[in-house]
Image (cartoon, rainbow, N blue to C red; front, side, top):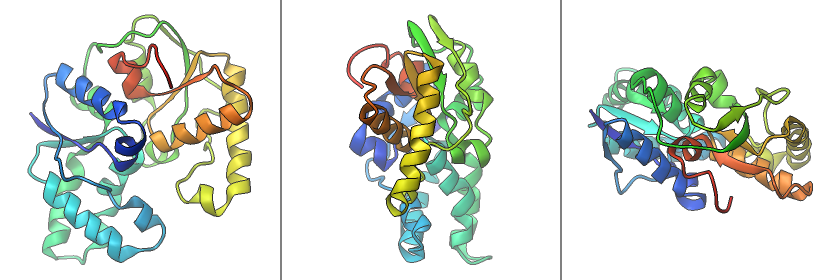
Amino acid sequence: MRVALFVTCLVDLMRPRIGFAALDLLEAAGCEVTVPAAQTCCGQPAFNSGDRALATQLAQKTIAEFEGFDYVVAPSGSCADQVRSEYPGLFAEGSEWRRRAEALAPKVFELTDFLANVLKVEAVPGRFDGSVTYHDSCTGLRSLKIKSQPRDLLAKVPGLTLSEMEACEECCGFGGTFSIKYGDVSAAIGERKCNNIRAAGTDAVVGGDLGCLLHIEGKLRRMGDETTRVLHVAEVLAGTGNGGEN
């Protein structure tokens, strides 16, 4: 099985160890993994900001780089959804690019969905001695139906206890460019989310999208919480999130 890892630009720039954790998980499950070296952005920021021309250019670049693989896996529900759900609509019906986008779409998966539902992994390499609560990212939850997959995988991690926070499915307030355009609203939503995280009383909050996690971590620290760790689910499953710095 030839799998391409779509690292995502945010992971590459801000927390590359998530990409390495995803790679470890896929290889541990028996995949032949390639990380296309020229990959950049999926085009979601441009798409959400109304720059259709740039979004289309980035879609064409991504399609060309990833269409030759059996599967494409991303440690991000929002990026995976951009390719799966939005790429075909960027191109005219009947066009060659529309055909290529539609052919690629069903091969693209968010990481935990791929591990749980395609590979059906029975064990993960990680161990986590402590308790976690899980934040459901909006796009992954509502568009890709990512809900049980990360929880089922976390249940396979030795030493880990999952305690659900109140309103785990509510937005963290990030929303990409939303947090820039509507900063006050974003901050208020983030504070409510962080209060729920702190009330859960766990060692860490875990999620599947780095944008959400950066937003949550920044808000927690500004609220004076220096102890709750903020981890990507890939780090926990791979065993790279059990110690060290956030």
